[in-house]
Amino acid sequence: MDVRTASSPLYRTIVEALITTRKAAGIRQVELASRLGKPQSFVSKYENGERQLDVAEFVVIAQALDTDPVRMLSRCIERTATSCT
Image (tube, rainbow, N blue to C red; front, side, top):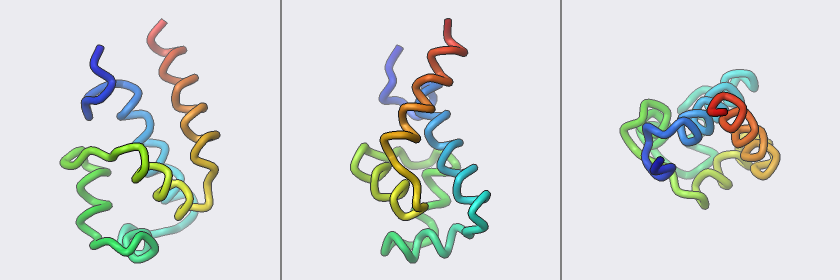
């Protein structure tokens, strides 16, 4: 399995966790983009799978959402491992 692709279960779980966290915090895409110093389309594209995030971007986004990126990634790995076994 190529975990680098946007279609991999782990990557999709990570993006879904970012989306869920953003929405639970009541943060709109435009507000998150502003926190990141990026256009709203940046957030829209990675949330819709049109753009793939790298590790550094994931960390910055999680921190902008006031979330521990290590904890979030660990939970995503656990969820994916459980669903894949």
